[in-house]
Image (cartoon, rainbow, N blue to C red; front, side, top):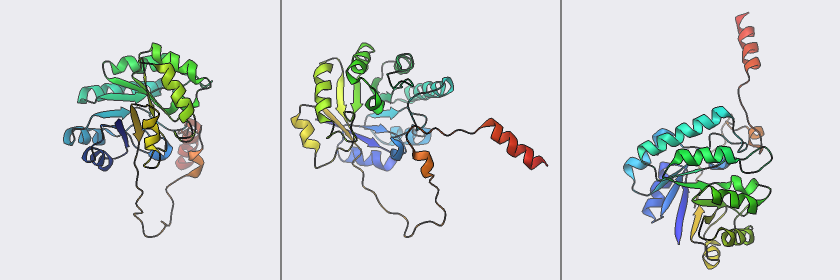
Length: 242
């Protein structure tokens, strides 16, 4: 059974290779579901390791509905991934109505060229999973990463099995989300060919809480997208000019 590790750092990618994992999905910021890794991290992994690397293309957290500017950035990131020798792309997009954004996803898939293309857990937000699955099949997406539209894949395993049956030989269904040593064998028994997990171990690096927190809990609300606002910038500039 193939094991893909969601690696959020060089250390995680190295651990995946040393432990015998089959490939990694390279990303950063697991706390928000993963974001596109930096070029420096990507290049270091590709240069120093030999494990197959699939790269998450997600420019920000909040949702999976992207502007033309964000799409341009995503396409540029994919081009970079192709140029430096990545093995696959992990991406996808939704409409505001929480359906697969066919136009944007087709552009992402086309830009990926011959690289494997995984539609990520944006799928777990779609209103009609079986309709979405058929749409992904027509686009020749390589695989679907999903928790079965539940907080964890073990809770969504029944839907995942139904999706796997519907996918047939056309598309691979890869369970991911909360998979660990206590439940991984259940997915093997259910007939899945591959699994996705982070195998994370948290290490406390500070001996005491910092005086000032660098985290903003208000920005962790699902659906919240934060951007600098032109009028606010102008107002601050005007005040500073007085």
